[in-house]
Each structure stands twice: as structure tokens, then as C-alpha cells.
Image (cartoon, rainbow, N blue to C red; front, side):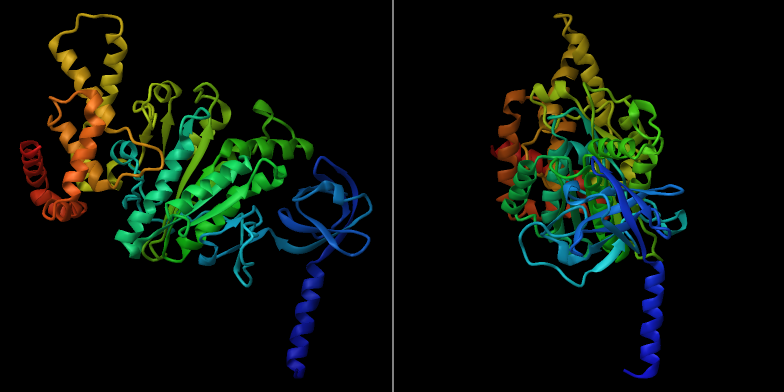
Length: 508
């Protein structure tokens, strides 16, 4: 080592030492530590709690910076921390590892692998809480993100860079829509590898068995290789459940900022808000509405604002967000649901009554909306499904009145029959994403009255026969795949589809 190298190393060491601050634990109550000292500590800084043997027992995060003390939350077992223990802050704001190596892995809220696989070293570290890209760095959301859910792709289209809320009561199929979207990306990434979409699923406050079941589904469908699971289960401490969505977003931002595309599912933000409320009350922060702290809106807004479609100068990458929020008895006017609705670019509202009637996914067409709309939709889907949403909303309204009377005029009876057929067309099984070409084909037959002679109970069988017929055809199937091309559809799309159905109904 020459003199210059030695001087440089000494300077760096002294700078690091200057940033380092030390303190002593005063008390530990319910996962919150009160610490004296730590004069140079920063809000959000990582703290190390050291026992008498000099071992780091637990890590934590500084949150309350008081005049003579610091309030910190613990990321581990509070029983390992005792009053009088040394606390070291090294000047590092909470950071997590990011990179493509995390694909196919399960990590905790601190970004550490918990699946028993190979330990990943030397990964790039990124801060979990950073500012969202400004307006000048963004581009309009125009590129479709195909979910594989017929009702979503046709009625509530989602674009890359959008934030679409999935909201509804418990056990109404919220997670299923998100998982179907992840499963569908395996097919979409195969068709177009250059614009592959990488998925991050963040499980907050769920049972470990539920997360394990989800991983099994992804592995069974060969969709785990393009997915990262960030798990902060119900067994984890509240600070980890609070941190997990930010960790998932940071991992997703790696893809966005490196000219790739990411999708983050936050399942769910209601539980994150509850964990933040728990932390805030223990830190003695003033409670507000429903005992949530005053900055609970900012908790979610600064997270969801990081979803963006970047401009050409910034690399054209994108990060799409699908936050999930749970309601109580369908009450969308509660505090957290209204907060997240006002932050996002639309919502998919799932209704328990529809779910119990066998309409799955149980999407309420009247209350669901995408504020990006048809600008993030394939031309074929835009033209075919343009009037579908209004038609289904009117059908649900007429259906409500029809239950009170038996004498219906012919027009109303036809409207009810057509609406029932279209509703049945949009039903699909769990974990069975439908390619967008198949959705276009099915909806074309429904919208253009090819099913007028069909009974509602035979729709599923018709769908199976149609797809089997098309996939076995060496002429129709390759041409069907070309419907993704907007120019081709504009020129010959409708003529091709009309010819296909006329031929199909002749031969069956």
C-alpha cells in the first residue's frame, strides 16, 4: 500500500467513524425501544442492538427523534434486547438488495432470502424509501398490461405504469386476480421476450400456509422464475409488515430504472396500515381518525407514486402497481379504502353477492373503473368491448327490477338474455389466465349476437368447443394471433372474425 492509498483509507475510516453514533437502551416495550445518546442518528437509519458479548442481536430503525432520546422499532425478538444494551447507528438509511438474481426467490422485509436456497452476496443495495420520479421523467401510460382475466382486459384495462386498486371484502377473489396476472406473464413473456414483465408479490400479514400455497401454484404453472416473493407474514413483527411493501417497490424499481418492466402486487395495504397504526401508537404519536396517525395517507401515497412509465430519455421502463385493500361488508367509504382510491388510477371492486352467485371474478362493473381506459388497450379489444361495460351495467340494473315482476316485454327479455350470456362469457376458473386473443374471439361472438340461440348453461361448453376448434386449425389459429397487431385488425380484423364464426357454426 503506498502513502496515498493509506491516506485515502484513513480519511474514509474517519468519515465513517464521524457518521457512526452510539447510544444506550433505556427501555423496551412491545417492540419499541427508547434509546439515549445517538446524537447523529437520522430518521429511518438502521440501528444495531449489541449485547454484553458484543454480538448484534436485533436490528431496528430509528423513527422518533426526540430532544434527549430516540424512539426505534425492532425488526426481531424484543426479548433479546435489554435496558443498558449498546445501540450503534452507522449512518445507513434502511437499504435492501436488488437485482435479477432475486427472481425465483422468497425474501423477507429486509431483502434477506428465507427460502433455504443459495445465499446471495454482492447484490446492489438501494434505499427503500426514495422520492418518486417527477413529471418530466414520465411518459403517458399507453402500453397494455395483459392480465389474462377476461373481465379486466375487456372492461377495466390496465396499462404498464398504472396503479389499479383491487378492493373488496375478504374471500371474494382479490388475490386470485393478482395471481392470475402473474401467471399470465409467463405466456406474455414467451410471446414478446424483449418487453418481458417481471413480477414482485408482497404478502403482508398473511398466514405462512397461504404464502406457501401461492408459491406452490406459481411453481406448478412454471411462473416462479419471473417472480420475487416478499413475505412479511402475520407471525412477523409489525415494523417488518410496515416495511415489506417498500422493499417490494424498491426491488421493482430496479427493473423500472434499468429499461425493463416490473409489476408489484401489495397484498394487502389494509394490514400494512394496521401495523403502522400499532407502531405509531407505541411510539406515542397522536392518533387521528380510527386511531390511525395523521400521516397514514402519506404512508400509501409515497409508496404508490413510485409506480410510473418512464420517458424515452429515462429508458422507457415501467413499474405497475396492483395494491389490494380489504373492505368490511362492502364499505368503500371507510378511511383506508377512500385514501387508496384517491391515490390510484382506478379500482376493481369485487362484490360478495356476485361471488356467492357463482360469478367469478365477482367484479362489480358499475363501481369498477380504469382512469387510463382504452388508451392502454389493444385496438381489437377496444373496438369489440367498447360498449360492453355500459351494456353489462344496464343488465345488472334491469335484472334488479325484473325480480319484482313476471310480465316482461320482449325488448327487456332480450336484454336480460343477452346480458346473462355476456356475464357467463366473462366467468373463468381460478389460476387459469385466458390469452388476450381468446378473450377477443369470445367477446366478438357475444357482442355480435352469434350466441343468441345458446342457453346460459351451455356457455362454458361452447367456449371449450370454440377454443379446441380454433387451436386445432392450422389456418385460423395463426391468423388469430395476428389480431394483436393494430394495423392488421383495422384492415381485416372484423371480416376475419365474422368468417371464422360463420364457418364454425356451419361445421359444428
